Length: 132
Image (cartoon, rainbow, N blue to C red):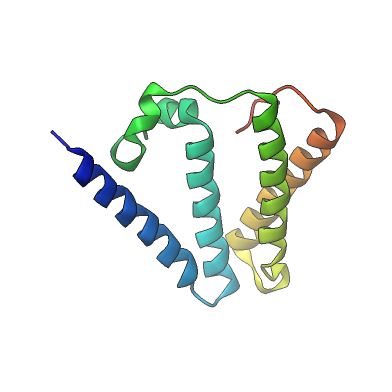
């Protein structure tokens, strides 16, 4: 059984590893995109514990998600809008012209989703469009 001390040490290690991964991001635009997309997915799973459970990823570092429900409050709607804006900026920081093949397709797809999400969010101050 895990005790509080092990939990704190484990959480610190996970936090340090994710910070280090982003700080040491490879230089190529394709590598930066892949690191960013992985980060987006981790944020999605933390934002939506229900999705983490549906995907069977509520284990290890995400084990606590198993007992949680998604936050559908107005305060969370505001945080989601800020997250969409943040993602658009992070994506725009990657040189799209330097990408080709599936990297370009992935970039365009995620950019389209984020732009569509932002458009939806501008129209409504409430509700859930079904995405985390």
